[in-house]
Length: 460
Ligand code: PFF
Image (cartoon, rainbow, N blue to C red; front, side, top):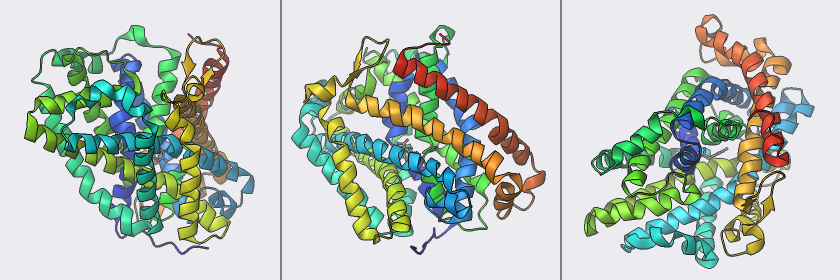
């Protein structure tokens, strides 16, 4: 059994968990999902899902982790319900899949940092060729995975905490400056309108489940990452306050990323539904327009910080399978880290080459009832983010409400929040885990699977 070193302070846990939450999901994925999901409608659904559905799941994950001090598989065994460790196993699979493609995109971001240093502002126009160059972006991905593994091998409070505390605020400052700049451009307000004013005709089932998947992905929920991080939290920590802070930090940064992106996209006359290339196509030209030296400075700093934001997320993604291997299979931490990282890098190879280089993985699958083919990376996202994470959230809420049950669940929260049981939070949490999350997450899981993978649309 590994000895848990623990976070050095309350802010340490919140910063690290927010570091896990804030990443490519907020700055790369959120804007293009909003763009594909028709703008304001997606935003509203995403916000509702984060605050109403994800919040109870987040509290449950942290409480389970802190109570058991274990990885997501071992946690359920310690609580005396070994069959429910299936939640943890599903989480391990989700984590491995997500990190496998996440690392590829992180490699793109890191490569853009180098391009910006060299003043290559036209790279956005060649994004398609850039991601096809698998030797180059593969090398960046390898560097990224290696750095992640190095940090994870140094243990919890050493690496993760320090990085998270320093870098997140800097990233926010740059983004806010870019928001201010973007609002001065032509057509900027069209972008703001698209982002903030919902167009009801855009409401489709696909938008609903994409928004749900995005909420879980962005908050790092549904796969036990917060069970793992929760296992390092002290007993006097107030779980509710922590969950509120993490949620606001994450949602706030995604919101700012949208405010930054849509004016830029509209001012360049680009379509908002540009897909995963959106930030990579749009931003270099903007940095270029700031003028040589300033453009190089801001552009390279932006992509450097984006890479760091991704790093605090990849660290948490890697920590999940590693903590499992260390605790349950009794393998030394350093060995476990490098072994797991290597396996995940290999699992990510089809995602790497499926962006134009390999025809087979670029046109990987055509779902029933769909005409479009989906590449490997999107396919993994559909399975892991949009399907497994909400399923994990469903199971975690069921477990907390009906198996672990209120006295023990609430007892754990009360340790760091003495008046909890009589607070409004306890009422909301009870309603959330018992009724709201199981019903909505369960229903949406079924509708998503039918719609996406079998082409059966029960609700249009
Ligand atoms: N929340 C991260 C992001 O938005 O970039 C991605 C992520 C990290 C998902 C950790 C899941 C996870 F366990």
